[in-house]
Image 1 (cartoon, helix red, strand yellow):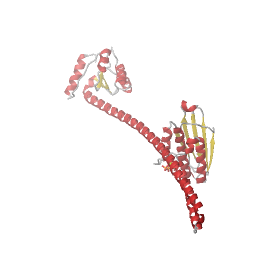
Image 2: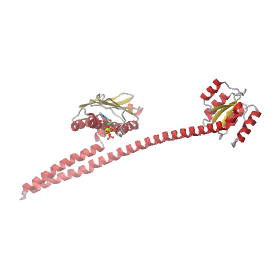
Image 3: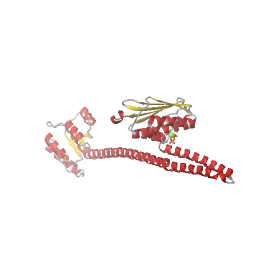
Image 4: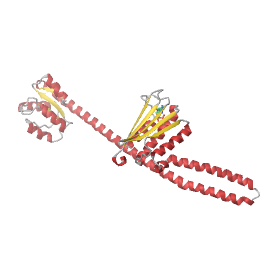
Length: 351
Ligand SMILES: Nc1ncnc2c1ncn2[C@@H]1O[C@H](COP(=O)(O)OP(=O)(O)OP(=O)(O)O)[C@@H](O)[C@H]1O
Ligand SMILES: [Mg+2]
């Protein structure tokens, strides 16, 4: 405000309306700059008629430095166009000096509006941060789970496997020692039975261990693990699986390998459960930029827009993001389903 009388008038009017406040009056750019440096004010009232400093400039400054402060144009001369343009540029209101009685209410409104806006921004920020934290926690848990499973798998394989083998050897020993026994046949039959049971148990243990942690993945890599799983799946489900690895020795980070493998398992489970497919075509390719796994079934498809409250697809998406990749599913009723997983490679895994 350049006119001290007007400044006084506005202050008196606001006090009389019952408003309690402190104020600073600035009449040129320098004064304005030094005034807005101090934090803790709620509203800027700007006169447009300042020859030394335009209200538009003041508004621009305040929007970049103090976005939470309300801005009201209080002016004697203003065209309709100017009023519209300054509101579009972020002013909260404008008041004509001939109509100052509206000012107290306008100030309260503008401050309240700013407060709500600020609160909204803050909670959006919080939400974003919370989301990011959840992502991190869930990635961390997934990693722990995989490590834990790997440990249990190793233990089962090494400990139980060895003990079972020990038992088998005991049985062979007993067999040899029963040569002279009167009830030989019965005992031998029993031993055969036990031995058969043990063979089954060994198979079960292997299966449990490899479900927990596909050791092929660690020993031979992603391509062989996918290949092995495809065969296993085909055998169990009766659905034919064609795996086309674009490149036989695709080596990736162990974390990425287990991530892709788990998603593949889950996708095939979905095919078996929902698709009524006869065939699945899988291709795994790697170039310098990324690794791509495409899984297409020729089943009945589904409407991807109809969102069900299921966790399968969500989990796969999450898992893909965990390894820095993306997961997409394309399907239409009657047209089969295609899943595409892309994982960009960073420099360390490119070579
Ligand atoms: N290959 C597919 N062919 C046909 N429909 C599919 C296929 N994959 C998924 N769907 C449909 O998408 C839905 C969501 O799959 P999602 O894996 O999220 O859930 P789900 O398999 O039903 O349950 P879960 O949470 O145990 O995985 C399925 O219920 C099914 O209707
Ligand atoms: Mg599922």
